[in-house]
Length: 290
Image 1 (tube, rainbow, N blue to C red):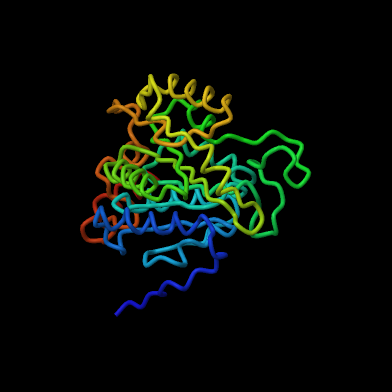
Image 2 (image 1 turned 30 degrees about the vertical axis):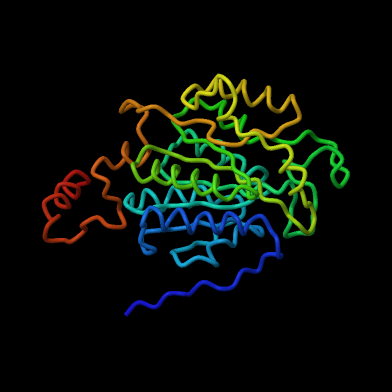
């Protein structure tokens, strides 16, 4: 009998926006009827990165900023698994920025959720890459992950949600996980998730969020049009949320990483390596090295 570590009670502050993400992940997995043993969540470093400790599924606590590399490894190890990576804006957009950019290009079929609270909540509220001008003495303009994601010409699913709208968040996570489970590629969802202790933005964000699907000219298959809608929304002092990019069916050349490398969808973790059935192959390899 295999024993597993059971979920522990959350260590987040009461009211943290990450609770909304936790609930949405649970609801999405339940709606899609994904067995817990087929789910893997790779968590980053920071408050949000501990989310896998509170869920009944396989979990890995990754190195700071390196969760995407490990998520790619899990997906390639066994493409039949449903893989989620989850971390914060500091983890993903600072030390993890290099992996963040390359995840779009690699296009492996897993979901990356970034809980953006515009601060380093775990280490007591310093300015993060997404912090607004003036926050804790910040003099740098905030980084916008959605504009960056839309600028990369790859068939990825891209969206932004808000913990203050749990219904929309759940719907978007369901769609993104379906996208992954169909081996269509990488899905990126930024979750606006206020830190009630150091940067409580609930009231401000609730007043500013704008679902771009309700705007004239919206077309989630048109990357350039969505990019312009986001720019216009930001210029009006609003925060664009919703599905930003929903790829059309793509060619074989733009297929997901696991289908390019493992067309039979059998990764090394589940491959048959028995000597008897593979003897001829092993002997050919040995002969080639002789």
